[in-house]
Length: 111
Image: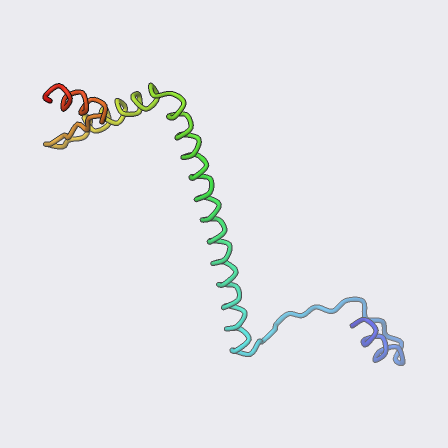
């Protein structure tokens, strides 16, 4: 751009130092295309962020399952914490899930 301006103004002894573009009027089709591209870019970034969140959540679940696998007491503690949370709610009916090993002991005693 500088070369083009110099070619046009050198004969008159004028040197253009700076050019400012103040108002650009784009065709409607180009505006729509640019808007669509920007929207697609935003959607792509949102999908990446959502995927990263899912990946972090799955890692946390994996770590939690490893802790529970290594320590059955941790599972029992989680069970008791869940019961405490359920009991604090204002429900009229509370169902207490029993561990399978307890049920096997009860069923085995009857046979």
